[in-house]
Image (cartoon, rainbow, N blue to C red; front, side, top):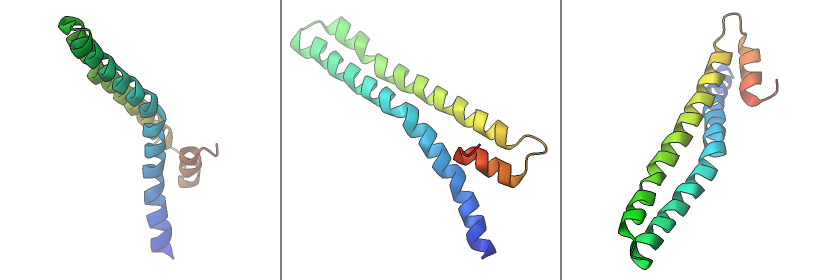
Length: 99
């Protein structure tokens, strides 16, 4: 029984981290895909190659910014969990959003 409980406690932070990642990466992925489409539009259909290449530089920047935001959120969660005096129950409750 103790092994099952320990496995459950190990899996919970992963689920929480995935939820944080999906929360910010959704809009960022849509914006990056839209800028790729816009880049192709200007580059191939309009013939404005310079503008198409310029817009083509946006997706990595958008995704890098979203990754930074995700890392900041995960770091804040980790700092809240690892504060001195925090019990395991309080840490798990804060990760699961019960607190």
